[in-house]
Length: 143
Image (cartoon, rainbow, N blue to C red; front, side):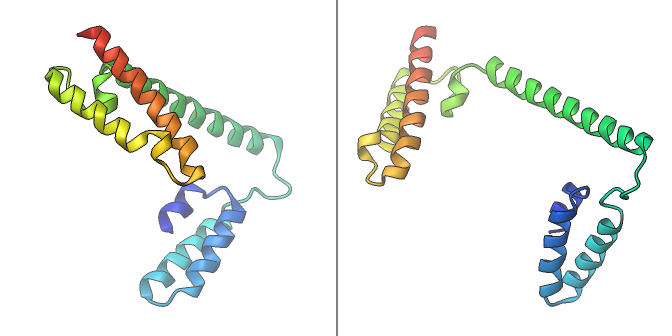
């Protein structure tokens, strides 16, 4: 709860829910978490009379966080693309052909839509199945 409170320190509604939950829990640690959440609540919401400079500062901080997250996403995407298709199905680029065939067979058994009795799982399994098949086709092209 403390981690969520820190992550959502600017959201008064989330902090109120976390504070209520922490207040219900017994123990010294729960009381300490509740006290910390109350401290965060005191500084969470901007005052109703927050001026333009304060609002611009909050907006600049949010824009900076968005830029950092976009950079992390781009780096993660580039790293995934650089590692090749093998990593997407838990293989190494030097995996032997028999292992690739066995892993493909296992993916087909596990994620084939017709093998899913529950209709809610069937659509998700179909998505995973199609993506895995695309990856295995890409692996075949590289060999």
